[in-house]
Length: 242
Image (cartoon, rainbow, N blue to C red; front, side, top):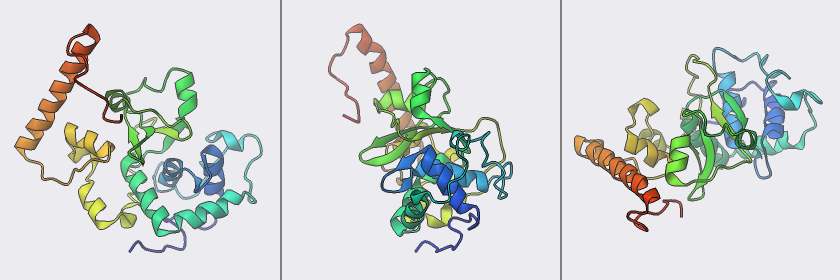
C-alpha cells in the first residue's frame, strides 16, 4: 500500500497549498483540481537541487498566473487536489504520470505552443495526449507516428537546460508491478519506449530477438510511411489510435 505522508509526496505542509493553488490555475482539472502532469512538474521542482524546497521558484517570473493576483489561499481547488491526490487512486495516477515525465521541471501551454507553431519543433518535448483512455506523454516523433492528438488542456513538458536529476519521489507510490515493469528511459529500446508510451505491454524480457523484431517493425513502418504519399500500398496501414 502506498505510504501516507502527512506532507503529501514530501512537499512541506506550508508550501503545498501554494503549489496546488498555482498548479490548479496553470492547468485546472474539474475532478482533480490540478492536472497530474502539471502537479508532477511542480513537485519535481521541489525535489530538484536546482530549485529546492524553499519554494522561491514559485514566483511571478516563473508562473504567469502569479503575475496578476499572486497566491489565493481561498482557492477551492486546493482542497479538491488534496482530497484526490491523497487517495490511492490519485496517488497511483500521479506516480504513473511522474514516472513517464522522469523528473522534468519545466512546462509550457500546449495550446500556446501549437498556436505559435512550436509544439513539434523540439524533439524532446513531452506532449500530453490520451491513448486508450490513459494519460500519455509522447515526443513529437511519436505523436506523428501514432496519429495521436495533443491534449490542449494540459501542459507540454521539457527541461530548458541540463540539470541534476530530480529525486524520484514518485517511486514509493507506484504499484509493485508497475514499478518493476517501467525501468528508466535509458534502459528502454526504441520499440519498448513506444510501447510504454502507448500503454502497451513492456513486461516481456528483452532479448536480442525482441530488439531485432522491434527494429524491423520500425523499419517496415518507416518504409510504408515513405511509400504512402506516393500512392503506393494504399490502405495497408492505419493509425494505432483509430
